[in-house]
Amino acid sequence: MWKVKEYMSGGDEEERAESFLDEESEGICSLSTTQRMYAFAACLLSGLVLMFLALFVFAKPIKFALLFTLGNVLAVGSTAFLMGPEQQLRMMFDPVRVYATAIYIGFVVLALICALWIQSKILTLLAIICEICALIWYCLSYIPFARRIVSDLMIRFCDTEL
Image (cartoon, rainbow, N blue to C red; front, top):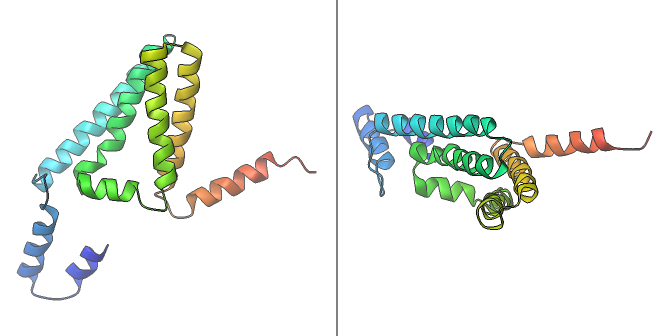
């Protein structure tokens, strides 16, 4: 956000444009803006396609877990092309969402362990359900006050007092 404020706050137009583009291309990944958008779209689309294909093999939980988890990781990781991998990791491990990130990564690993190593269909399905819930909670951490609203709604809906 500070880059945008700095960009809007002064200096001549050409100098601001050059500094903004230079800051965007720093780091390991020196892709152009167009290349980043194409990579983001390709990664996101392939992740969504894998998650959709996973629905066809739902009767086979191990294959479902592999396709769904890989699609999940591709879709979440696609945003690294927009902001860069360093910024993505910095945002993921921000104190506001560090627990949501750790739980999500933990359930991704657990789902893969249950599918590949243990090969238990019931444990794999439970891990995938927990992975989906963790992904939703992780995504809500990027929307201001969303987790608080969802928590309040769940308390209100699950309250047993009359």
